[in-house]
Length: 244
Ligand code: BT5
Image 1 (cartoon, rainbow, N blue to C red):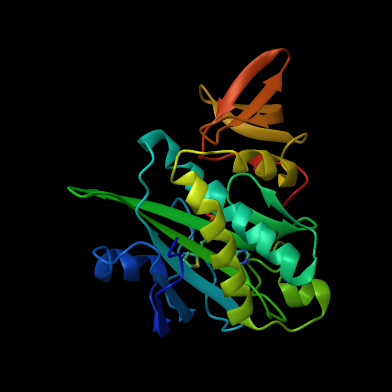
Image 2: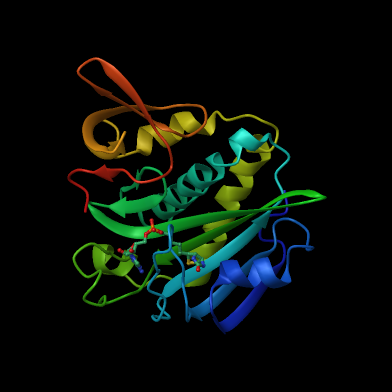
């Protein structure tokens, strides 16, 4: 597959996701946009992504998946697995996944993923945005207690290009099967998922419920159990206890 065959490099941009949405939707899938800095890096649900530090990697990839609509949310999980594989092969850092979209080392956040979809007459486009802290030596006050970088964990400086290439290669391998409807990557995802076996808090019928996360289903939802009751938690909000 062609993921990362064409790369647009920018010095500064508001958000690499926005750049693709506004300028590149007609490009072939696999197009990757990478920036040194973002002035308005985006997280999920209106949150922000700290993007001032050129030591981090900020990139977005355009995908045009042929899978059915209910499999689209799995792209976030697939990207998480690609990053996790890449980090563990670049530096053997024991990266894990906090469901659904964070890559963590220990209990700190190394990477966040924001996937956004656009539907038009020619099908669905997904913009997969990935931010990875690579050589950051410090973080601003708002995230300093919960963020980490490859440098802060391993005391080694990495070439951002090498990390990027490794993530794109892993994503390319996973996407070939995913795009043909083969979701078997979920087995590996679950093995790397630090949320399973932990207590998770979410809102159900207006009440906070705390239950044990026991599995991830074929749509990527988290399955939780409390007092024999089963809850399916969607990609909204779930706080995983013990990890920031
Ligand atoms: C995410 O959202 O984790 C998705 C982040 C996606 C960023 C990439 S960068 C390239 C592309 N272009 C964009 O504009 N975005 C994507 P969420 O799960 O909502 O987490 C956001 C929270 O993570 C914030 O509220 C902070 O608490 C924390 N955070 C912000 N910046 C961080 C950083 N650099 N490192 C670790 N944690 C951070």
